[in-house]
Image 1 (spheres, rainbow, N blue to C red):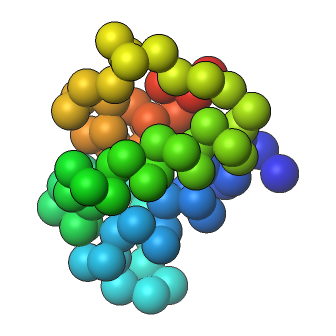
Image 2 (image 1 turned 90 degrees about the vertical axis):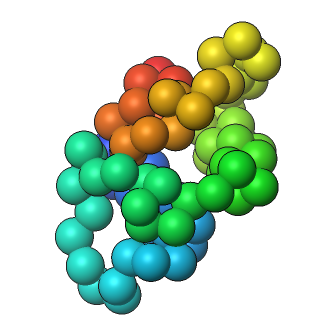
Length: 76
């Protein structure tokens, strides 16, 4: 499965305002779809496990979790 699809599948459960079955474009604003700061921590741990990476603290910013494309750049 391509990294983009793995990421989108991982993100969906964290986006409580995203309707079931709705498209999730890579430029979607995750905050508007329900991702909050507490969920970002859980998402961070899920990303590190799914992609086998360790994300340095200095890379973890609000902008890093703004859109799926930003999150993908964080784990790439």
